[in-house]
Structures are given as C-alpha cells and as structure tokens.
Length: 294
Image 1 (cartoon, rainbow, N blue to C red):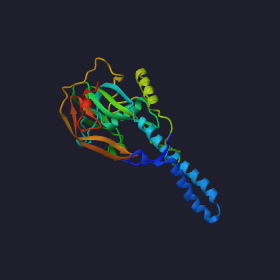
Image 2 (image 1 turned 90 degrees about the vertical axis):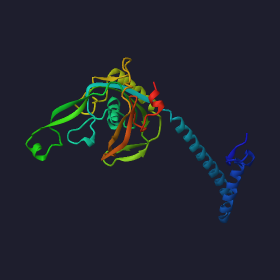
Image 3 (image 1 turned 180 degrees about the vertical axis):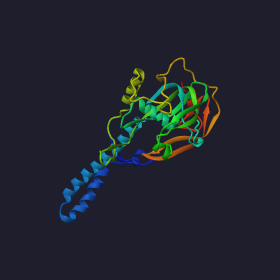
Image 4 (image 1 turned 135 degrees about the vertical axis):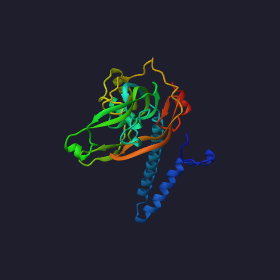
C-alpha cells in the first residue's frame, strides 16, 4: 500500500509527493541544522517525529471537516399555534400600533425558546404558514407600562392605548435546530469559549417534540403581547389547512430582531413577501420548495 504526504491538483498520482520521501526530506533538513552543534542523529529523529506529527495534524483537520460536514444534516422542528388574539406590532405605526399579519422572527424564536430552552442550543426559524384568514380588530387597553411619561408614572396614572390587533389567528411555524459555536462561561466575567463535543441536535429535537406533545413548555408562550396567550400550542392538527388565498402581500419594512448581544439594535428587512399563505424568514420571496413542502 502506498502513502502520500501531498497531492498535486491536476497532476497524475505518479507525481504526488510520497510519504517516505517527505519524511526523509524533513529528517535530512533537521540533520543539517543539528550537525552545527554535534547532534545530527538527534536532529534526524526529531525531524522524523515532526514529520509524522504534521501529517497527523493535517489528517485530523481533514477528518474534523468530514465530521462537521456530516453534522450539517438538518434537524427540523415545527409546531402549530392558535389563539383568539395576537399583536406583532409594527414599530413604524407609532403610538397606535398595528400588527404585522405574521409573527416576527424574534417572536417566533421566543416561542421556540418557550417550548424548550438550552444554553448551547437554539432554533432558527425558517418559515411560517398562515392557517386562518387575516382579520384585524380595534383593541383598547389601559396601559401602565414603562413608556408612560414621568408624571404619569409618579402619579401612578394609566392611559388608554389604542391598537389594531389580529383576531382568531392560527399559524404553522417551522425551524431548524442549531448548536452554538461558542459558549459563555463564568459568572463575574463571562467569556466566550469554543464549544466542542457531541452533536446534541437530535436529542434536542426529541425533547422538543416530547414537550410539545405533552403540553409542558419551559414557560408560557404568547402571541406577541404577554396578555395574548395561545389557546393551542402543539403538533400539527389534521383539520388545520394553509390559507392559500392569503397571497401576494408585501411587507415594506419587516422587523427581524430588536437586540444584538444584549444591545438595543433594531434590524429590518425590506419588501418581504407572503405568497400562497407562506412567509419565509430566510428568503425575501418564499422558494418553490418552501411553498410546496408538506
């Protein structure tokens, strides 16, 4: 069996660098350096050892790349969520907010976290299917939150907040399980460290589906605002169907996320489209595969 230290792209195998030639060349070069202080034989052994070490490191990197390639297999998770009311506020609608017709990227990610949360894992939302007609309704509530003026907070006064919300909503939401490449460790001074080890995505997917089926989320999810608790959160129901009539809707400015590494940095995407009841969180216009996937 022949072994090669280096291959040459576009060249026949006969011109590749044989392993024994590579090791001999490394050893002879080490001898020439070590003979200056009378340790030629030691230099030969060190050269051979270093040659083997470099080859091992090279093969280790190659094998690691193959393992990472195999880990690219997608582990998809999904759920159906429905409720009497929902509010995914558009920031550009001011003090009388109007809801987006679909959940935002960050809202969906929060629902995934509500079902199952792990420090080194997360779910990246991929798409949402609208499974009920889009209906808006006027909503008035007494607001007592932190957005009140200083005088109102001091006097403990509320004010009426008028909003336009969604009613009788139902969505099917899809995502892909991801592993974080770094982890935060330490209580006083957190540091980002490289995470190594086993691929836990399949285990996460199994636990996620078990919690979803048993109705045991990590915490109570919501449909945008905290007061809008879903009436159903679980696996897909056979009676639920995608609303293909909800078609060709363009969201001129779609909020993607509000926070970046705990800093308030709103991020928007422009001209995001809903096609045949499907909105993609990855592509501006849902692809054919995203629209036709069962």
